[in-house]
Image (cartoon, rainbow, N blue to C red; front, side, top):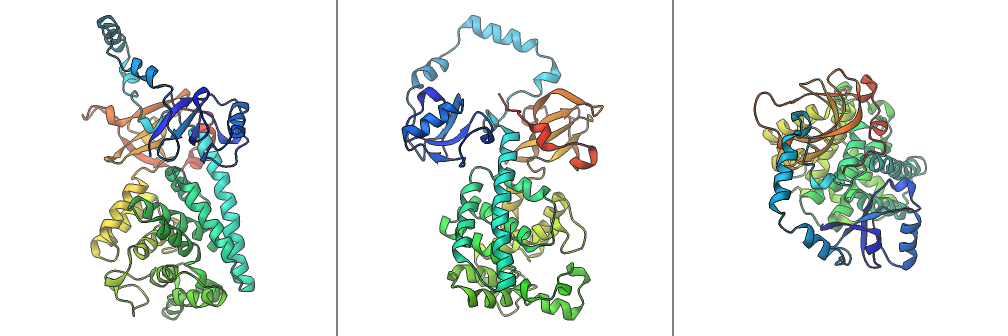
Length: 427
């Protein structure tokens, strides 16, 4: 995606809007990304008081109005200007110098606005998933068009908001209800599939399979839906029948695409033969089925379904890595997934060796141990007057550099992420 930030005065019909200079909640737009198709769209942008927008030049027309200005800005600086810049740099205190040079991906990004807007969008989608699965469980009916609507929403809304959706999945209040797990698996499956370059049609079918992969639990008595470690051998055997039970049940209600059927049928098959059903050759498992199994296990680890104890992201990823090394999961795919999630996921609350605390705002894919964070508390854990962006990538690699020493649970230390990020926009 080729993004460009331009003043509202240069916006034209035919441009593809993918970002604005404020929270979407303060605008009349229901969609966060769309092609500006008429003068009426332009008028709405201006009436909302928006001063700058971000456009995607791969999906709409480019802006050439600012080319001359940009050319002038890129012209060599004079010797006097250079000396002035050097002098100014020398006056910057070390504690300020270490937080310079934000990644381009964060410039002009409203972190609080994005998180709030996506929380509301996800809740809307979640209500649709709940309706689908409750109807399926109570009446046996499957509204396939409603399923398609939800999966299309997942495909559209997750585009360019990967990290925020990953954060919401990680920080949500875990519910034993299937719809919460179904949406998490569907969303993460799409994000992982998209990150490895699978076609949109595959991603769409994978989104559907993610929503419906545990439909077989509707045919299993509630007593059998306990944490896996608490099941007896007979209960475990019944539990392991849920992929087949679910697929048989779904096919009685509607005709699902062949790929969706395959992904549901295979989503518990392990590459080393330790999974189920045992009559499927692990060597024939499709990449999308491997994604569904991996993501399903990740969310089960976070929710505590496997052991009865919810795991942290770090422990969950370590567990997946070990299962990949042993051959149960696709090791290369696990590596891609860890890169997607991040060792310190976006919107995590972390504490540095200095005692300062901050919120992870971006990850470096080249070094997952060096994210960009927004410092919100000083070494004494007192709120800073103004949040400070901290970029690990510009620090010297010596023992005196601050390091992340722990990930904190926001509620346990009295911090609300949405409040801490409210109205904060990077420069």
